[in-house]
Image (cartoon, rainbow, N blue to C red; front, side, top):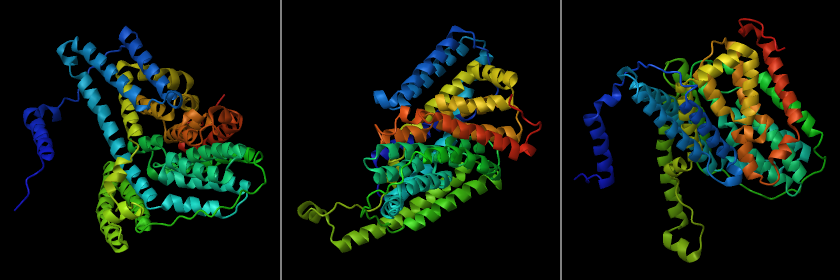
Length: 490
């Protein structure tokens, strides 16, 4: 006899059924829009101020301890409410403009959200299976000198970030630097700067290395294999400041520790499945011409099925060890629990995912008002594509590369492949110039609080800027065949 569905599940199913039967028009909104230039309207100025204020709170997150998603989500809701009010006062053909534009931005967000959710779940699962702990333990126990650790953490950050993303990689390598450096705050600060620069540079030549590269790839503006044309410029972007920073690292040796970490069962299989999932995402986009998120979500489904077998094996091992609930509570045995894939889903960076919602909807709202068109004319019309794309990197250091890149993608300036690769590079590595310019920098500031700080990073901005400029020149020279016209920076 079948069990009745739980009340909560039944209510959820009924709610979705009502949406389809009572509101079928939700799926058939017209794509035709009539836009009004509101850039000089008081409401347009108010929306700009609102977004600027919300982003001020994002930048001040480390000081005021308010999660960055909260202000931008609120700003997005208010901006779109004001847009809807303005368009509701227009003739009837304008009434659905806000609805259509919101749906367009929500589709952009949905693809990004699901892609990142799958990737984050894999990263969390590898962490739970001890993959990152084993790597960190090996590095700490080898007895390397401080200078060797400096170069190794930078090198690993550069080559891991294209797969695991720059944020996760920076946090992992920063943990190694802190464990090795101990009380040597000078080494820890310099190593963290090197790690942030390396992680951002490594993420710039892979669709999976940074949110900005992922957005460019999903838009179909740069093919998967074309990202690797940025490999040498990315190497230069990291190596120039790394060589300068290494001169400030002492030649001492840290204390050898006895830290041990072992891989849990299934760890290697999870790594293989992650690589398979990335391959499926690439194939879905390149060969089947469907969104890469389909490949990622299929891979997540495979991981969830494999997670079931890990859970069964964990339960069997715990039973063999005698780790019953009674034994744990009475004898004080470690409360090890069987693997649960949904716990790894819960551990996703939900604040970051909601932050992306607020940013995409807010910037999309400003685009509907007309500010992105205005910005495109000012930057790409007056300055020219090359100078505008170089400026994008500078703005990424001050504001953050995600809203800047989304704004560029919303503007959709007419550019050749060389220019799209240039803006991908500058948006990816430009944030390295300031510690607040990238998610990797902000995360490491929180992890090495009081040691790797805004001003510690600012001290070396000149060296990082040299790498930024050198990487741009290398790209312009090395990939000159991709430009319609040979770009020249005055």
